[in-house]
Length: 245
Image (cartoon, rainbow, N blue to C red; front, side, top):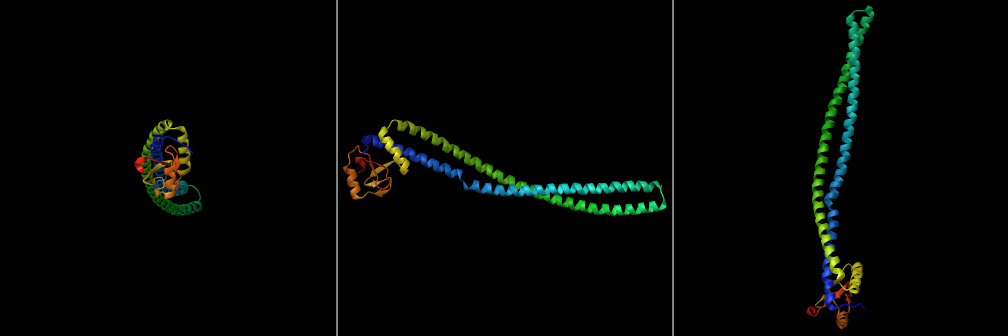
């Protein structure tokens, strides 16, 4: 059976307090890293960015369509201008001039139709641009919320990290002064059980929170003061003191 002076065993409670604090800080860090607000916002941002991408693509396609419509109108207008110049010159045969007039009338009808198409595309483009702007606002709002929460969590995580470093530093220094054999037993117990040491207080193990059976209690009381004894339920080291009987 491992042994350590009673006064030395009492120090395990202080060490356990530090380890409990480190465990609490670790749980706090994991909780902050898994904040559901961030998860929800990331999902919402993914959807919003997808819709924004679709809106941008629709605008791009409509702008390309508008350019084609404008080019078609310009091409017809150029032909009309050229034909009108020929007609106004008065040169050529009469039948050719009549044919030219008919061609100009047809081209004017064609230009009117194309201008209608151009106007329809322009109106549709205005609506698509408004949709894109509205979707951009949604994305910006989500990113703003995300940034605010992320800054809040980063600040909290920094506080946790700072305290973890402080407590870990104190623990290292404190553990260095403990009995090495006892410390090895404690570290092994902590790793296996999650709790390294706890008080035996008025017959109750504070490691398990349970009252020890008369048989277990009698066995522990029969152990030497420097014996390292264990909780039969939680498996942690039970630290004894005459004041806690």
